[in-house]
Length: 298
Ligand code: CA
Ligand code: CA
Image (cartoon, rainbow, N blue to C red; front, side, top):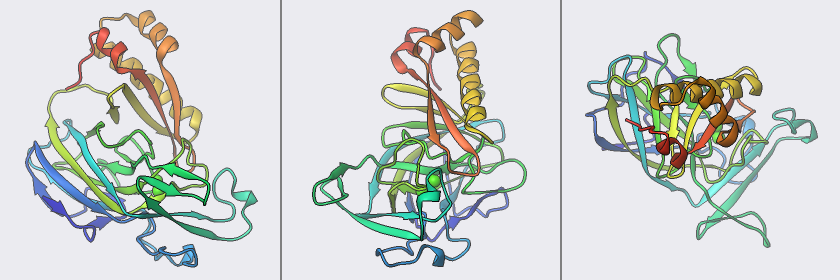
């Protein structure tokens, strides 16, 4: 199934009409616009002219038949394909370094042979990731710039091809939507954006019943990660830590002191981003440690 980028929403909302339906286990490709709605295609294109409602769009939503509140959506990210150019934009006063920015700035970088052409001397290997991926929250809709327990704008650079993300189902069908691809981004997202690109994301979506997994939860080839967002980075980091403790309580035989000790030895608190309306952090443990402790994922 192919979901065209014209099917996109600026808000994760249970009121959004589904763009498509699928069955559990189906593979779907989401075509996505970059976070500027593809309005910045050259250095001279002004950032401020991106129309309201076209920032940070998420393609979807996808209604997964049989997904009911309390279930999880298991999203296997099978493939990410990106455009051959990406954009970086700066606005005065935004982000931790915005006070150094005197006037609006946009720069388009070519992407050639798997590298961002940063300058004549510097080629940066791409590491494509999904900035926004989430489901509809149970209550009021939440704009796609804001992350939360429903996922969305987490800007976790480890949400890449080959990873598996578990998201909550808060409303019937889950209403999965995604976008805001980055060709590459550093932890923290210091300028307020990654290298913003259009592209395509192919995922397999599976409904998981009766799992107490704390979500959003991410698995890569090497790591297990819990993710949390909060008003401050400190709250986000503590939230992610608490979720990993809860995961180990559910999934391992370790007692409370054992869980805390393990997290202190091999758990890493990492920054996803500090520039969105809520900050996002992850707690990461090596997959081999989790699996040696008996942890299994649904
Ligand atoms: Ca983002
Ligand atoms: Ca972005």
